[in-house]
Each structure stands twice: as structure tokens, then as C-alpha cells.
Length: 460
Ligand SMILES: *Cc1c(COP(=O)(O)O)cnc(C)c1O
Image (cartoon, rainbow, N blue to C red; front, side, top):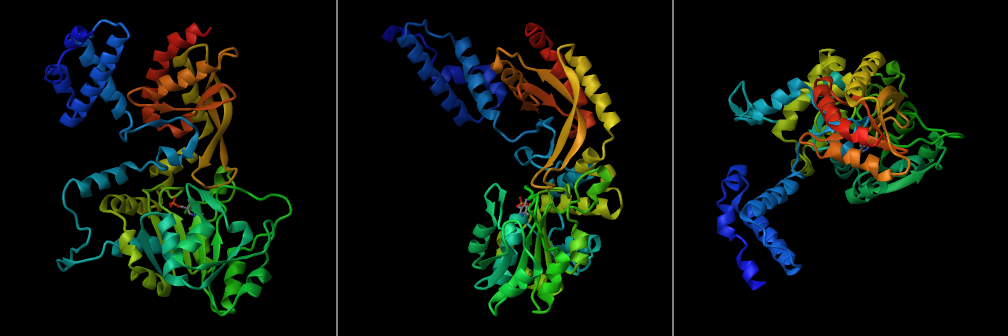
């Protein structure tokens, strides 16, 4: 057995193999993978196997290294039918947004440089002006994401004071964002009013004390209370707060700027409406329905934004040049009235059903007779529009009743491609939704489905 160990190729010999050199993995990764492979080769010899050849060992090391690099961040085709899929990176950016990111990051840029007088400038000046123009706010500031926007507003303006929140809005948005926890972290005291299903203006008014700093509304983005309910509108909250000269903060969540009802969706609160209603600060995400990069935007009254801008947390939460570049372009799409045409999220939402049906039919043709086109729903997702879904056409790959592993295997084969395709499985049927796939990626999906035809045939 010792003799057989000696027949294994040595570390140096394996590492200098041209195939491994060409693959271009960093030296330390290579050595680690070679050692791990040799350990497993020795274990196999102990079990009585013949020693692996140099060729076999090199192949096995390559497989090891490639399997690991699968987890590097890379593009995925989202055929899941969830438009704002947080696990898949939320909103894709417009072509112009991507170009702007590349342009400012491939060299230097005027991030904090005033072009007019050649002196130090602020990264906030221009984007704030754009956000004001878009939302109608007096002032605005942009930070890392909406969670930091809310934390900043509460910390800078409500610390050691009370913030009144409806019991129905002391919610968990998902991914660790819980209103009571954020409130505690900010140093503000949460005062819950009303009941789980009903809150009235008088509930807020009666809860005001000399320690009250603000009234906070949180959009219950990912669930809905139905039946006997009463919500206090932002207009009513502003009215209740005005008599006591208190500010109203609106964590609106998704940052929707386009009326969603024109697409048959439930109404999503609009940023412009909240500002017009008199909210002192409105906080929202850049990468939900706004369709831009990850960012947290705070728009509202200048007296409050001024205080936020001076708070030390702003430095800790600041947005980088790449996302700022994409955000500027995204806001400009709205200002130019081209959001539906240019922003992928809105292209998907506004895509006509007959176009989707045509694409699903083409996919089905490539996949062969074992698949079919069925009608179903695209979810908006991303903690927006509870129950928000759009009618769609899906490619359906039926499972085998006696073999539940079959459909999991098909899903895995699609996921393990060089450009992974992610679908969704519902009751042992794999569904692929063309609405969430940019039409220019149809060729990749079609090729993948053609490659699967032998697997589908086998299942017949
Ligand atoms: C999504 C959401 C957040 C968190 O926003 P991020 O941009 O993910 O940090 C906060 N509040 C509400 C109401 C949300 O919907």
C-alpha cells in the first residue's frame, strides 16, 4: 500500500501541468485543491483502488476548483417569475445605468469635485436636486439602502424620544428588518397605538406626550390585513401631527413613482403623493420598484434633511460612486418620461401578454412535446405590493408522478449551466416565466431547453 502511495503524482508535478496553469487559478487555491485531491486519492488506495494517474488527478483538481468558483458572484437568468427577487439581486439596471457605472469606475470621476470652481464638492448635491425635482420634495439625501435611511432618520431626529407607530405597522419586512428592533437601535422609544387591525387618528393624538418626536408610518409591504380594518392615511396622520407641530415620517418601502393600477395591480403608495400630502420625510429603496441600484433615499422638508446631512451616520452609510452613477441615470429616466421603456423592472411590468405568450410558445417549441404553455402569475416581489401579481404565460415542465427527484434534477441541470437559469417549482411542475427574462436572453434559454430534450424524452 505504501508503495501504491508512491505511485501517486507529486504536488509540484500536478501544479506544473499545463491544463492547470492555463485555468489561471491563484497559486494558493491550486495547492490547496491539489492537497485535498491527493488526500482523497490516498483514502481510495486504502480502500483498495489503484493509484490515480497524473491525467486523472489533474482532471479531478480542475473539477474541484470549478465547483468552488460556482459561488463567485455572476449573472443568472431569472425565469422564476418574481420580478424583484432579493436573492437574485433585486432590480436589473437600464443599459444607460450600467454604462454610467462602468464609465465612472474605469477611471477617476468628479464624485466630490466641483467642476465649476475646481474645488472640493459634495457627492450629494446633484442627486438631491434630481430627487427633489422628481418627488416634489424641498430637499433629499441618499444613503446605502432603505434600512439605513430609516435608521438614520430615527437616530438623528428621535433618539431618547418617543415615536408613535400603529400596532399594525410594527412589522418585520424580512431579511432582519424589524421595526421594533430598528427603533431600539436608534435609541428612540416605540409607542404602539391602535390594534392589529384598526387604528384611528384619535389613537395617534391621544398618545402624544411632551416626549414625542414624530409619528411614523411603515408601509406593510409584504402582507395584507383583510376584513374589518382601518388604516390612518398619510393625510390624516399629517393632520393629527400638525396641531402638535410634530413631523410625520413615512417609510414607504418600495419607492414607487408610477401608478401601478394602470397595469391591473393593487395601488402601491407613491412617493410624490406622500410628499404632496405633507409627510416631513419619506424613505424608500432604490432597487425595488424604482428599478435602480441598491440605495436608500430620504426626501422631504429641508429643516429635517439638514439635520440628517450633518449626522455622523451619513458617513458610515454613504453610497459609492458606481451606484450613485446608476441612480442618477435611473432618476433621469423618470424625469425624461422614459421609465417604462428604459427601466427593466417597468419593461417587465408593462410587457403585453401576447408578447409573453409568443415567447413561451417559442420556448415550448425548443423543449419539445413533453412541455406545455400554461397561464399563471408573475409576482412583483421584493416586499412590494402584497398580493401584487400580473397574469403571465409560463413554460411548464411536468414532473413524473412516481419520481419526485426528476423535476429537481431538471431544475438543477438548468441551474448548473455556465449561465444558470432559475425557475420555480410548483406542485412537481417546473415553471419558467418569460416576463422576468429580458427578451435578448431568450436564445440562452432556448439553447438550454434544446439541450434538455434527451432528458425530457427519457422521462416519456
Ligand atoms: C424593503 C423595505 C425596507 C428595507 O429596505 P432595503 O432597501 O432593503 O434596506 C424598509 N422598509 C420597508 C417598508 C420596506 O419595504
